[in-house]
Image 1 (tube, protein in one colour):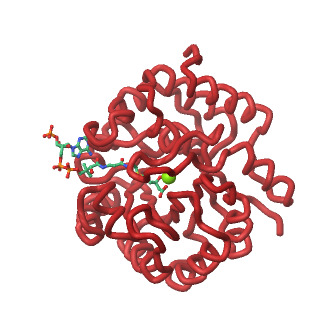
Image 2 (cartoon, rainbow, N blue to C red):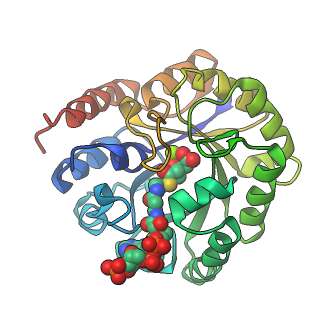
Length: 288
Ligand code: HMG
Ligand code: MG
């Protein structure tokens, strides 16, 4: 196997949303600006969610306003409802992302509503995005394991992925939120989802709690997936998924893909520098 693979950088959003320390906007802006020089086509910058739910992202508009945009990079923001969408658009997000769950328990914990209510909330976002010409990514969380319900069946994941695809999401990112999914479970889930959504529209989003994320990447590559999410320095987790560790580290994923003959288009030397910056940022040592 060879050819291009896109890595979508999650650090500033999925990474920093879970940091105990409230990181100043200037440090987040410095991180995004450094990432903009690495070669990513998309960087998820922030989320326009309730600051009562995720205080770490309360400075979303300030961060979006402060970054230096680089040609060829799409700056993405997460939006759970129309209020979030409107704020993300006003802030100039190039891509927006809606996020649903494959389990009812996680939907409640993360969005305070059922799966079907969340999908209903996305309908006006999709209409507005279509009118505005903005591309939308749709996440499905807990695609193998849920912190509240245990095993999640491939059928549940397929139902939500298909609904997001049918409502117009250009890409469906499959979130293994807990980072505990085994390769066999990932393979079964991808097999089911791939029968309802074209594999070219799928992205894999693996957290790395159990250290199996790279094995799961290999399973997804085998299934034909060519878009992967990762966070520089392995930053992150999800505040509503107790025990979940960070995303797969971008620098590990990039090296792994290169070793397997794929082309990510990333400058790995620069990426290593940003990984060091991310480590310092976690410890509060970054000068912006
Ligand atoms: P709610 O409490 O049911 O909402 O929360 P509400 O409509 O009753 O509003 C409550 C308050 O929030 C109101 O303010 C609203 O104005 C405000 P008040 O009048 O009380 O002062 N509000 C907002 N403020 C700013 N931006 C908004 C917004 N919406 C309402 N967009 C809600 C429902 C969806 C808002 C809440 O549950 C929420 O914000 N959830 C987001 C949780 C989150 O961000 N989780 C992490 C991201 S998902 C993730 O990490 C998984 C992923 O990485 C994939 C994977 O790993 O699986 C993507
Ligand atoms: Mg995540």
